View 1 (cartoon, protein in one colour):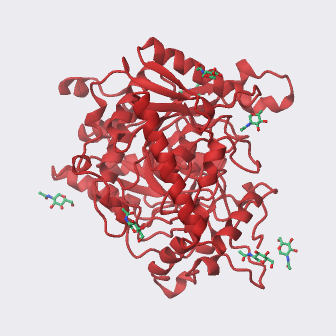
View 2 (cartoon, protein in one colour; view 1 turned 135 degrees about the vertical axis):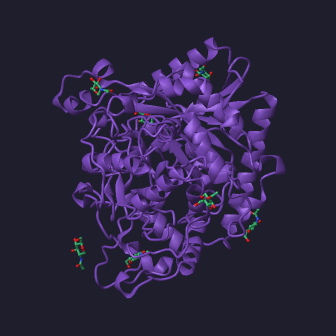
View 3 (cartoon, helix red, strand yellow; view 1 turned 90 degrees about the vertical axis):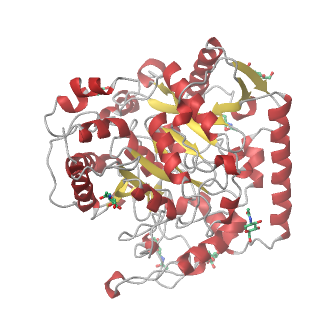
Length: 565
Ligand SMILES: *[C@@H]1O[C@H](CO)[C@@H](O)[C@H](O)[C@H]1NC(C)=O
Ligand SMILES: *[C@@H]1O[C@H](CO)[C@@H](O)[C@H](O)[C@H]1NC(C)=O
Ligand SMILES: *[C@@H]1O[C@H](CO)[C@@H](O)[C@H](O)[C@H]1NC(C)=O
Ligand SMILES: *[C@@H]1O[C@H](CO)[C@@H](O)[C@H](O)[C@H]1NC(C)=O
Ligand SMILES: *[C@@H]1O[C@H](CO)[C@@H](O)[C@H](O)[C@H]1NC(C)=O
Ligand SMILES: *[C@@H]1O[C@H](CO)[C@@H](O)[C@H](O)[C@H]1NC(C)=O
Ligand SMILES: *[C@@H]1O[C@H](CO)[C@@H](O)[C@H](O)[C@H]1NC(C)=O
């Protein structure tokens, strides 16, 4: 650590080069705080710098769906606290974005669904309250795959979000707007949710760090639900340290009667400071299980780059003294495990409860909103186009509409998930493992217009409730590896590579150890870089009011019909 005096003598280049306007590119919590507390910038200027980037670059990737009209007044309140010498909170003046399934008073919670455009929550989600109490400034909301039900990040309200590194590909999902936005430096960090893959797929596809917490560590109240068994909330960031701070703040909610899974954490887990867990430790001597079944060994233009990047990672980890254990048990097959997915049994009941609990529109001008699953997804005579369901999702909604948690098949599946969890415990114990590792996705993140986000490996953590930290593992550079000399290379050659991420999967409540490994790996294999399309500065200005932005609905690929029911 630098002595404090050095920070004053050698201000970070980031803002020194641009006078009083803070250059937010690759900014971290610490760099924002250094600039603020040396009075080199103000909170209003920091927020303005992010707003300027969003206004300039968002039309290309369509990641942010709405901005928070109160962001600048919140910044002014924090500037007044700096002037008064009253600076507290780990996220003091840290601009963040929220997946548009988190309740925030004063903004709609849409789930990306036009039918929920008027869903105005009466209270902040407890995680949102914790983030704000720690000083975070909510800049706005990000696009998601509609209702978080797939991983392409296309929705009827937000349109299609585009991968900032490769404008021909999706950003992963379902929290793909958060991933694309943080990658493009629209905020310091962003929240997401994860029912199967949704905090890890966007991290993998956008060269970010993310965590999926152990089930029960963080309250899910006030967030549009899909599955009691599988849902988690979490965050994505550009550095392990910023991610650790986000986890500490979100987990500080602790026990929450609105989400009884929060009874589960043992007492030593409560009030953990995850940023402290980044220090010390070593990769040397760690035993890492490589899940062989979570690779696609069939060579192809989409799989070979992932396998090469993982092979490089494995050789570097081995060279650093980690012991690799090849886990070949055929049970670890993501497609087979996915048969135990229980979302369809749980979605309707949970969504009914969420929609019934939130108050209806707060003013008469807000307009109506559906108050149940069936009202949202009704077959009506008006040829309802309030929602978008890609063909692969159609059968899911249909199944969810007549499945329930009283079905015998549901209870049987829960039992089989317990069997899977016991097998997993045995794998950890017999091999004496510290963690499992595998690529988040067996192939590169899919192209725009694809039928599904195929090849992802998130299901094991989703069903067992075990924690994962996802780290950037590498970039596939088409200029080096895929020069097939046809014209469709041109946009990708300009892109500078497609990100690939790796999951580090641990036993329950081991987030502190996973983050320590992630920090070491980020130094051993430094990967993270800016997306070239948004790596320049934008003209500085200090905003008087928060601009409004309009999602680009023309971006929706024609293959996804609106309102298919
Ligand atoms: C500092 O600001 C916080 C948040 O506005 C407030 O609750 C607290 O009372 C203030 N403390 C002092 C000493 O002014
Ligand atoms: C929470 O409530 C559900 C439904 O009532 C119940 O099945 C579950 O056992 C409870 N506790 C936990 C920790 O999930
Ligand atoms: C793990 O074992 C399988 C089956 O023997 C083999 O195909 C694979 O290459 C091995 N992986 C590594 C990294 O050695
Ligand atoms: C409903 O809308 C779709 C898509 O716009 C259109 O193709 C279809 O003809 C409409 N059906 C009716 C009954 O109006
Ligand atoms: C593996 O990759 C091949 C080639 O891209 C693809 O055809 C196949 O469907 C993939 N298999 C799985 C299980 O993802
Ligand atoms: C921005 O991206 C271009 C194209 O990859 C690269 O040449 C340039 O060095 C990058 N600039 C920065 C500041 O990263
Ligand atoms: C809507 O109506 C069609 C045709 O009757 C039916 O097949 C489909 O299951 C219905 N969808 C839902 C969500 O009820």
